[in-house]
Image (cartoon, rainbow, N blue to C red; front, top):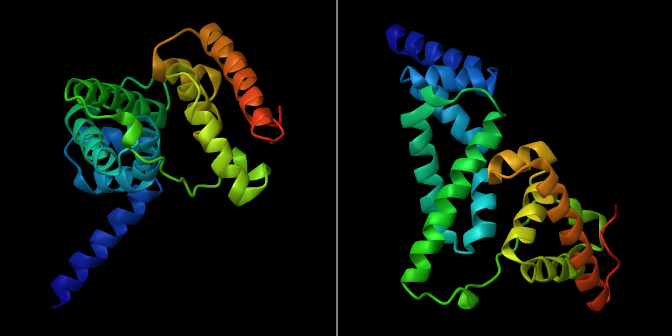
Length: 203
């Protein structure tokens, strides 16, 4: 019995230590096959990755499946992380690639994307500065009308609070292109919001 208590205490200690560890150090441990570190990294980032993917694919089942694939990739390829970006940026770039691949496959299957319902995101986002309930629904509808490239920039910068540099790393484009897309995305979004009777986003 005392052995079991000692093992449980040791397990709790190792989980607590992992939780206090940086993402980069967790990846180093994952590369060595440490499952506790994998669980901690997953619990830290799975919700963010899920919301990011969901905004791209607009299908809850597909998003859940893609999140599983992302973290399976992390388990397999943790040793390949080179530390050029934040771990969260690396995770979203893997997620983006998988979501785009899934969308291409879905197009080949002739599934009508228009039939997929817009999913409400309950996260506290920059739209919180606008009038909550009704206005946030209008904002989501307006964002959905943007081109895929502009929608992606708004998603990364506003909803996921990524910097211009991080957004460029995730999408694979220069920072200057990110800034240009952000400018036109904000301009178009402001026009759409004005047409819907809502003030534009704060600068």
